[in-house]
Image: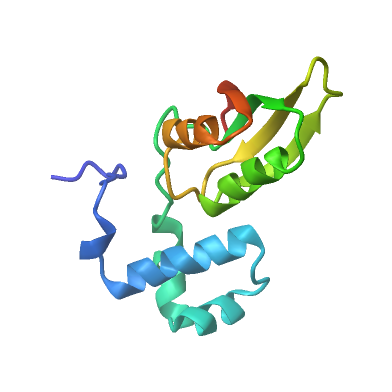
Length: 150
C-alpha cells in the first residue's frame, strides 16, 4: 500500500537495471564537472536522453552515515631525505587525495607534518592507511586528528 509518500530502498548495484546504473554515472559525471552537458554525458555512457530524464531525480548516491570523506592526519617524521615522499606515495597508491599539507621546521631531528585528505576514492579504509603509514621507515607516528562532514 502506498500512501503517496516516497519510499526509499538500499539496493545492491549488481541487481539494478543498466539504465539506472548509467543514470547514476551521468549524475556523477555532471556533479564532478567531468562533462557540462547532459547530452555529452549520456553519449559517453551509452544511455538515451529520455531514459536519463526518466530516472535522474530518483537515483541518488549512498553515503555511509557518520563517515566523513575529508579527514585531517598528523604525522611525526624523522628528518631524513625521502620520508615525506614515501608518505605521499603511500597515500597516492591507496587512491587518497591530499588537499593540503603543512610541514613545520624539524626540531631535534623530527618534523611535524599535517595533511587534509579526501578519502572518498580510497581503496582501503582509514585505519589501514594509518597502519601502513606507521610501518614506513622514518614515520614515528601517524594519527587521525579530525574530520568534517560533507
